[in-house]
Image 1 (tube, rainbow, N blue to C red):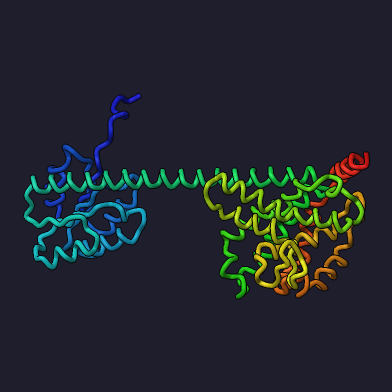
Image 2 (cartoon, rainbow, N blue to C red):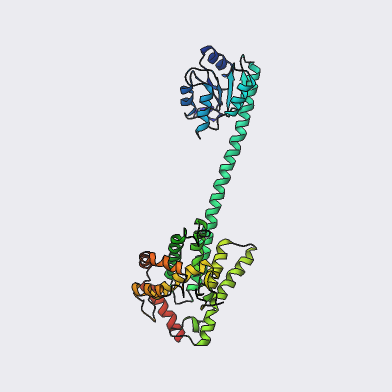
Length: 383
């Protein structure tokens, strides 16, 4: 290995001047401390500036045939790869207007000819120190941005795992299946994406909130964890008293999520939507639902989306105590519920996406293992 390869390389200075004597003068002045590259016209200067590694500093004459120094500076400033290279104009044009023009074009400094070698060296050193500091800050910012992105991905993954763990806990006590969770999650996303440009909903259904809806949807029945097995797993109709207990799963779900939020000590966007979905997805557009009998737009949008998704999936899903309804019949029932059970516009979004719902149902269809698990739960209850 070459021992010198571990030493820091010299900064690269590009000198641009159409006069050979000036190029030679600057090369001799700078060569002891810097790697000097030379260009006798603007086009060549741009080619060198775009090369790898790029120069650390450019000393640029203004008055040149063809492309002058001002045009070279403009071209450098226009490209992301060369925009950060500091430019010092080195010219015989000495008026204050000339200097102002150079600085307006993005130059870091302006030196008039004939030059003073100590002044040139001092200003070159100064601009290289400024560039080093700027490069350090940019590298730090890039590092911090990557760290923020990494931590954001980690937090998103933690959210997803937490949600599915909580939803799966509810599933172990319910006669639904884990695939019901996945299906309703995707149904809600389809509805939200269809309605994102609708005048009633565009203020809310942006990319961020659609993502939060997708994350939150699996928690819609989390409150069923608190319902007694004798009621939760009952295959037949509920008595009025049992149904009143069953209806409390909405409040239990909201309160459980709210308690988790309180433990964090802060409001969390996806948990806010999760609370709305858990508490209000059994409300009906005409006010005949529960737990509060809300109606119309008073029902949170997240819950209105879940209402359609949840009912459709309940209708088509096979359980140990019932057969699944054909897709077409389920669609008819959802259509009949427009304006009574369901928000009319959400219902219309469903009707526009019935094929997508059918495909989601097929993609996440229940299997024999799921049904066997339900049968085991039912037999346990009967014992």
